[in-house]
Length: 157
Image 1 (cartoon, rainbow, N blue to C red):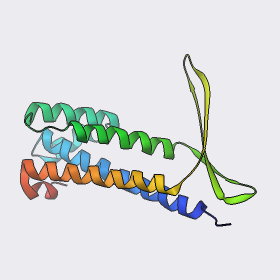
Image 2 (spheres, rainbow, N blue to C red):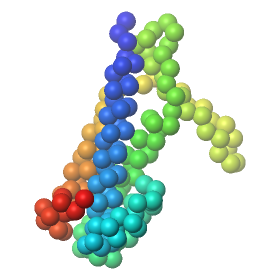
Image 3 (cartoon, rainbow, N blue to C red):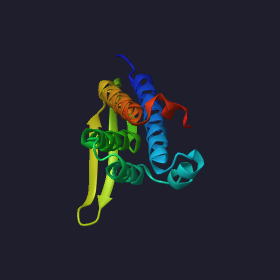
Image 4 (cartoon, helix red, strand yellow):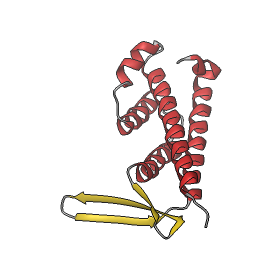
């Protein structure tokens, strides 16, 4: 029996890394949309949650660059966050009888719905696919930034 726990741990680490880079790049673009002064933009966005950052990005783009259609980017930004949250805010366990069999557990209790328990076998390829989606949307953001500001935006950090 193959032990999959190390593969899953590596994939989860990659997920954290890739999502962190996505969030940083989104902050750079939002800050640039706010001001050409990096410090001013940074002050405004530094404490924003990811969701508020997406909302600010959307509103700023509509205000300043309404000719750019960012609906697909917004959808992907929201989708990859939901997938990331699913994986990161879960607990993982090996089957005592089969270390190749890793399960993800998530417990939630929502108002009006009560307790919900999700348990599923983890396929490392699904986590890797989420990482790939994150990298793709990050590239889409980079391409959008280049269309608007040219390569100079990459020096904005």
